Image 1: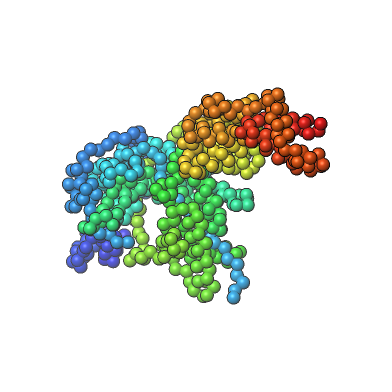
Image 2: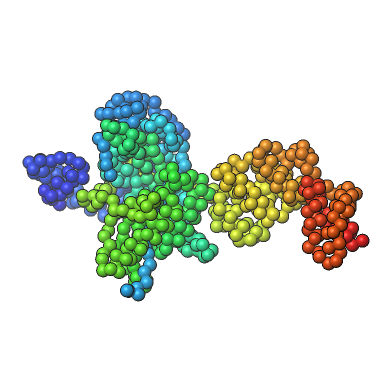
Length: 95
Length: 482
């Protein structure tokens, strides 16, 4: 299961990553190396095994519906490249 | 021109915001309209390392909804990441359900204007989280982002392409909203965005099996808007096809002001959300017991309640429909009927549909805000049944009850509105009226019986509506036959 250069370029564009031609070559090579390593797992027959068999029917934990406020908005805003009042400001998005 | 008869094939996707206090995966408040970003935390801000923990109440509300629509609730379901980039989605993905939603199947019964019903099948209901809001107009230096809504729990209700006309879509949505309100899982407010709808629309010649190319219409913010947009899009597609053109698969944005749909800027490439199971969340396993418990606690649903109202209270079909349209009104009716056992339920219903609903409409308020509770209304009915006040005076008393919050009894006493049933006193008034209106008495005696109503009116005027009409009738007949 190899990844083509085109697929790498497409994934990069979906992920909004800017890759130069050389980057695409390098990424294609690296991704293929990772995939072929993981591919070894195909040697094991997992046909009858559920993807969550190791969880033994455990459910995701649940929490109660009661408000627990986070009170450090200032720091969160300070961590953003730009904020005005309590708004985060991002480069203008036009639809 | 062609003689082809066309029909629409429509499927609706409805997003309903669940009425939980806190968000889907963190415990920030879901309160609407507060200071921007005041209800955010590392989880819903998408900060690195923050982990989602599912809200139990959101699950319960979602399951309640699925059970109410007869969906199959799956004991195991999986949350998936739906990846896309937009500033109001700071994680870069929305947590949703994709391959294994918590429910599938089910149906919604749409009622049409002529009273007939159509069963619209559901594909699935799944859980997901909402995005925040981007505001483009508020800042000169860019787009402002408010993430208070980000992470609010939603259910997406997906119908099969079973809808054939705009009217059916309207009936479907009306029923859907009614049930959501009965279940108390969503406030159903379309303007505030707690209920949102997208429509997938295609047309085909009647009798053909396969579907035509569909378009997706978004931005539908009222049920009438959905109905209009479907009608508009049907016609657009039909005239396109009849003139030899082709429907292009695309997303359209409905413009309610112009009553037309325009093409959304087509994305440079087909949407590719690269769904995959969210590794931060284990599967959701719903025990049989929990599902059963939720089922047991379902309220009586509107369709059944409407039927019961007809049977138990002897209400005409139309009355039963109006009185059960909203749960609070149905509850109000039943409480009043129970507290006023001497009054015919039909009369209670009439009063609610006329006087109470008029007050609701006038001030655009809910029945709980009218200011007269079932107990107080029943108190007024008791005065009518005892003959203390007439039905006519009752209206006056009711208006004052709304205005003052006082009981009917207090108002009647304070204003001296007690009905005059005393024969002696009324006889005196009747005689006075007859004596003062000799020409009309002559007319009546010569056979012009319509004048009778005039006498009744005069007596009522003289008593400011307080005379017992039955007694007045009897007395007048007696006196005039002499």
